[in-house]
Length: 327
Image (tube, rainbow, N blue to C red):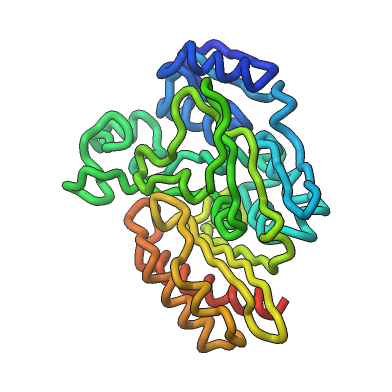
């Protein structure tokens, strides 16, 4: 599958990039690492007249520890850079563990943390060639008016399948969004809409430029577990991140988030409440796994059945909780 024709724009600053987006809104796509955009363009999911290549925007790269324990990460920082960062490995291990599971080493060398946060939602009916999609009458997310996942529904159920966002949610991460009117900083949890088609709160003339890990989330024990068909390359079909802090053998704080089983990455509500003040054992881990499975809403967006993916959320949550408690 060949790429459509386009004009490449290469800004050197954030302001220049925002200006390009404002001038060509509606007919431009942003290229960070390109690991998701380029295959989608080959599938004719996107055929923009312009592609905005951010590689030359140096101010959007780098991992910068701050005084007090917080960390600022440029949105163009590669996933391999996050995976291999000694500082992040020591103080935010759930993030490095999640980054290490993304695709393959070659793709992690290209893919960025900002790109993973902004990753397009995925679906068996959407991520196909133009010929394949035309044969099934297209879908509500692209060129059609029917959701094949939930027929008759007006909402797109394509699943969000990024690996790092559940880890970032567990860490109470905030992101910086830059646009023509300046910069705004929001909790990552508020960035996602839960709609597979309009899945993020980002205007066409805006960019995610920085990621902020708060000091109070440092030094939590962290675990990420991922279901995929192959041991590398594949997107998650179910993913669970767990962070935990213990004191005197009991859980002082904990958070659990999941990915690939909803149209947005999701914090599991009440999971922390179940764990705080408790000594973790098999029964408690089982109960937390059941809670996570009830929050998962996988539909037929992949080749694996929704029932199996929901069950694996339960299993992976239990295993991750036990692993975090014993580390």
